Length: 345
View: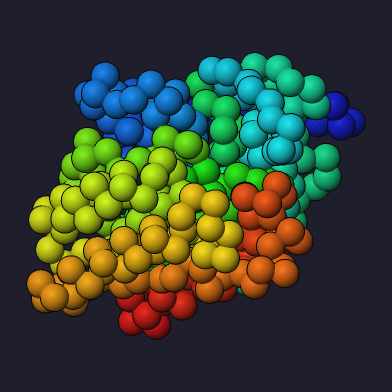
């Protein structure tokens, strides 16, 4: 037990890797014994940059129930990078959401005051009384080594309520899929969508490194999922690269998972054709058409070029590339109905 800064109040720290805490977003954690999102066995086969970003914990979630009134975190990161385009709350902070019976609501972002590799920080006010469901999103970028959660010394701790959709929705794609440049981890479009659905989440957004590697497709194919969202258009270095990899990636997953709903999305830049996004959109549409011709009844295509009007783009992005919080809210509005349809909603 350690005193916190507020009135000498005592808390007891708990290891999140022990029951009744549940951790999601790292399907290969037992194999890896770490918070790496991809299986360690394929890491030597992957490009260097993908090896660098795979340990980023985007989409990692800690869940439990408790009647605690205080919450603090004792965090050790493997590295602590900064970015001029992203907040410290996003890169190294933990988003705390609480459900008191009416759905999850944001409570606080716990992040370091400066830029340390290890830090202790807390929510600076009392939480609502009574049993509550906690959902804590891990940082978007800086890899996590250990996390301990500090709660009132006499607090009850129980397993979280089950997800409405316990089989995860897996999102594979670029830095946009990962969540850059939201202001904090819970505001990426995959986090928003799965929170609204009360669905389990795996985020395979690999900034600058999702290029349709078949090793990643094969790893995805081993997982028991409720839906797969394929959104790596922006990371493909060229239209030709996308043509060479996109349908092959889809087919690798589909071959192993004949009944899995698959949603493929083109990049939201159709009007801005610097990288040939019109041609790339057609390549992705061809993957969809190929699947439909072969009788795939669980394949869906979303045209990302319809997400934003050209005159909105500056206001809905941070840097004319990555959506901001408003941009991710718009993406959620466009993608969520398709997933709801997939789930029969």
